[in-house]
Image (cartoon, rainbow, N blue to C red; front, side, top):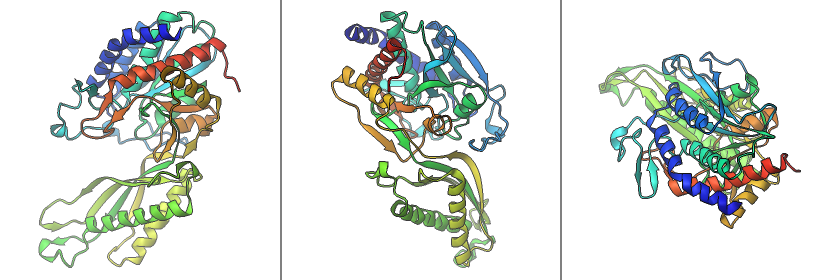
Length: 424
C-alpha cells in the first residue's frame, strides 16, 4: 500500500501547494486570523471533515498557565479557532495541531516579493508564514487527501482531529483554551511545525517581559552628563545576557548539551524618545527570556526581577528601579521521552518512507506541545517541513519537504488507525 500511498501524495501535491498559497495570501498576524482560518475550513470540508468554530474570547485568561493577552488594539472582534474532525463519535485517537497566527512582516520593502504575496522560485514557496507554520496545514491535508484515496475507511472506527489555533507565537492561549475550555484532547498530538523533517521533542521555558526605564530628560548639549534611558536599558539587557550565560553553567539542560545558548536573551523591541535633541526620559525594552526546563514561569519571573533590581540598585545612574511587566509567553520548558511510542512510531514511519531514521532533537525555544505534555499528560511531538528564515525576511519553505513530510505522516496515521490503539 505504501507505493500506492506515495503515488496518491504525488498526485495531490499541487493541490497542497495551491492550498498553502491561499493560506499565505490571507494575512493572519495576531488578532486577524479569521480569513486564513476560513481557507482551512473550506479545505477541510472539501475532504469531508466536520468543522466546528470554537469561540475565542479576547478577555484576559485567569488561568495561571496562560500567557498575557495581547493589547486590545491588535484584536479583532468575533475571533475563533477551528476543529476539523472525521465523522463519528467518541474520543480522538490522534490530533493534528497547527497555529494559524504568524509574526508581523513590518519591513515589506526588504522582501524580494511582498510578504503576503506567495511566490514560488527555486523549489521553494516564499511568504510570511509559508514555513512557520502554514506549511503544516499543507502537509496534513496532503497526507489526509492521499489516505482518503487509498484507505477510505481508515477513520471509520476511530476519529482524527485537525485543530487550527491562534496565539501560538505570543501566548499559547489558543491551544490552552482548546484544552481547558473546549476539552479538545486525544491520545496523541502531532504539531506540524517546521522541523526540517526531524522530531522535535522538547524546548526551554520562555518568558516575555517589558522593562520600563525612567530617568531625567535634558537638552542634547548635556548628553555627555545626562543618564540616557536607552543607554541604561542597554546596560540592563547586557546584564541579562551575562546572567543567561551564567545560568547555562549553573542550570544546564541535559537534552541541550550541544546548544550554544539554550536560554537566549532576545531584545525584540525598543520604544523611546520624542525629540532628536532631547535626552530621552523613558524607554521600554521588550525582551524574550529563555529559562531552564526545571523552573516554573513564576520562578523565572522572580529570578529575572531580582537580577534587574540588583543591577539597577548598584548603578547610581538609575534614579528609580525599572518596572518589569509580563507581556506574553509564560511558557514552561518541556520534554517528551525519546523512547515513547509516539517518537518510536513516527520515527519508524519516517524510516519506512525515506530509508533513514529522522533526527530527534530539542530547541532553545517553545511550542504548544508543552501544554499537552506538562498540563494534560498527552504525548505531543513536533514534525514538519524544511523552512528557511523563520520570522525573518524572505521566509520560505521547501516544497519537496511538504511532500516528504506528508509521506511520513500518512504512514504514521495508517499505522495508528489500522491498529486502533497506541501500543506500549
